[in-house]
Amino acid sequence: MQNLIEHLKKYISLTAEEIEILSSFVKLKTVNKKEFLLREGQICTANCFVEKGLLRMFFINEKGIEQVTHFALENWWLADYMSFIMQSPSQFYIQAVENSEIVFLEHHKQEELFKKLPQLEKYFRILILRANAASQMRIKYFHDYSKEDNYRVFASQFPSFIQRIPQYMLASYLGITPEYLSELRKRKD
Figure 1 (cartoon, rainbow, N blue to C red):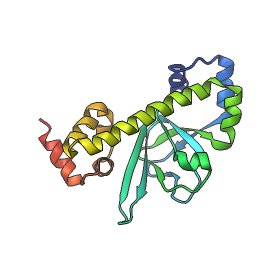
Figure 2 (cartoon, helix red, strand yellow):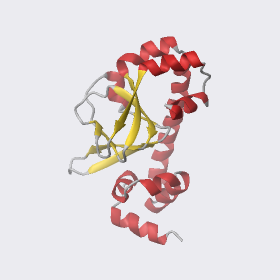
Figure 3 (spheres, rainbow, N blue to C red):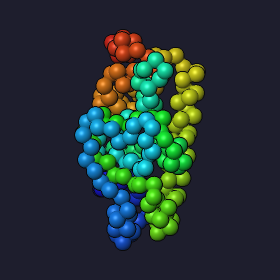
Figure 4 (tube, helix red, strand yellow):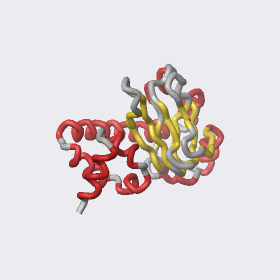
């Protein structure tokens, strides 16, 4: 869990004893490529930190087409937060895009962990605010920018994603066809 510990220390302080407490509350699991961590209709029981690898979150629209809403690579968290908070059935799928190592913080352990390590509430507050700001910007880009400009912004802000995400998944995330994405990549320079 070295990535998780280093990531946490960017925002909060943790002693060796507190790291031991944290370690006793989370689970590290290897997840194979294409393995599901969550399926529609299931309850999201854990917040997932990507120690190594890549995850995606998607839903299947009324036409039966997968619509990717989020990606998470190393040092990112991913969960269906509505399902996680409300402990209600999810409307999303979470799947490994690559073989991955995931740290799971289970819903039923989170509050107890926050009582033992209250600085984690500060950490998650910061992350949630940053994620909300990123979502607001994504919505703005979606409405203000052309499809081509959306791709350019994404490619410039997240070059590591471009190399790792299969083209059809990236196209789904950007709301374009894989063919159009291929055309945009050819136009690059």
